[in-house]
Image (tube, one colour):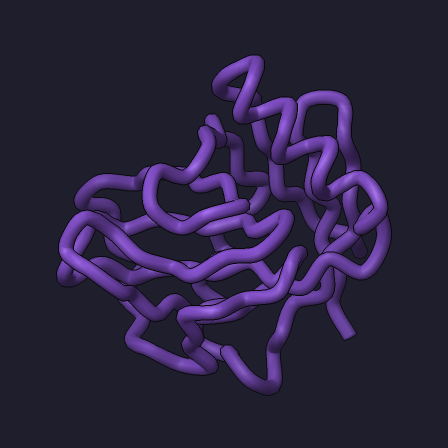
Length: 138
């Protein structure tokens, strides 16, 4: 079981790569590590933050995709109807864009630090963009 460390501002998490259910997404994302971005609050999806990636392509299709991730179930949306993005839900979430409902690849699950998900989401909502880093946990 492979793990990643995620840091969002002052918050730290450990997340499991969902390699059996989303092998292509996990392998491609692992090739980006360490990965640094900015995370902002979602506009359409409810209690979630997102990393807008524009036209970036990870060259993966849909696998283990969902529109209703639980808190801490991180999705990669490979693009198509909306821009490419990573969605990081911290509460009730229905993944969507201004064009309607989307489905993203559930490729990471937060396994430690879950008790700080809501606090992180509210910090991003009220304080604005935060730095986020994904790094190998091995």
